[in-house]
Amino acid sequence: MKRRTFILGGGVLATLSLGVTATNASLANTVSSIADFRAVSPISRPLVYVDNGNLQLYDSSVDTETAVQNSDNVQVIGDAGNIVGGSNPDVPYVTQKSEAYATELNGNTNQLVYAGRQGNTGVSIKKSTSRLTIGEWPPSSFSGDIVLTPDKNAAEIIAINPDGDPNNAGAVQESIATLGNGCSGVVAIADIDDDGSVEIVFVDGSQQLRYLEQNGSSGVAISNGGIGTNNGHGVGYPADFGQNKLEIPFVDGSNNPAIVDVDGNKTTLGSGIAAKAPVAPVDIDGDYDTEFVFFDSNTGEVNYIDDIRDGNTVNTLLVEGSAITPDQGPGLAASGADL
Image 1 (cartoon, one colour):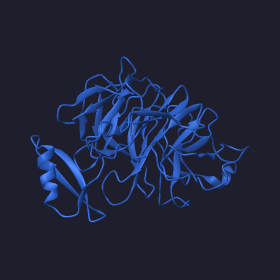
Image 2 (image 1 turned 180 degrees about the horizontal axis):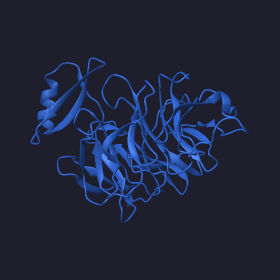
Image 3 (image 1 turned 180 degrees about the vertical axis):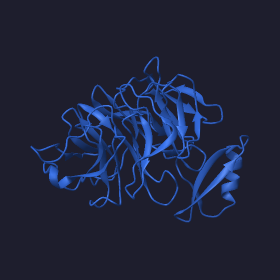
Image 4 (image 1 turned 135 degrees about the horizontal axis):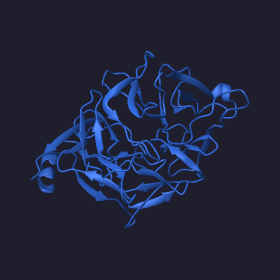
């Protein structure tokens, strides 16, 4: 079944499930019979990646690749949030100097949010084989959206306040948790277990997916959530892959693209086809469904899996007519919104 989403009267969402034989005409007739409905464009979540150390944005809705301003020596990226104040989403990234930035996609702002350890003050953040994210973490002393990243020793989760002085490490950085199993990448702040409160999803020191509750308990391991790691961690932001719940896209130790929920229910989407590098959940083809975007294990080209659980069709992503081979270390990320 395909899903199409509509807005009623300026804000109430409704979803129609259409049989595979439904036509555009039948959809139009259905919608026209319900007053004040209008179609919502798919959230294409443009794809973000790194090419020779520089951030790139691919907007599939217009088949256009754009270099993101003022970004170079990018080693680690994360999925976008909004922390620098512009109207577009911001992608966090870490440079070779262990500095953290947030850059506005299709905007003019590239903001240093953490200049790193200053003398004996603050900690250095992990600058390779890692992941960072943007979101609000209620237990933090910082209000609003913050950046979460591992420290350079992969032992703890560090919060960075983007509203502070990036050169004052003691004021803009705090420890969220020191973990017995370590933390080598922060994947997301999301309500992964659907309990009404967000958790931190992260990769531990043994490449195991875990999540941290707000009560500060040690990270809970997600069964069947061992990820493959080579140049980068083979994992992406949790998304709804058609089951009305969050599932985490990842690449396992056998190069299999897969998704797993908080209870350890794993669905394998292919056999040996994915490189052990960061992946992204993106509606890359504008069909209102989330695709699994990944690196091909043989060619290094970016591919995507369409029709998840209904064929798992693998396609090569063509950017302005050509396949692309971005840097696998930082990997792929989703921008989080239409631009």
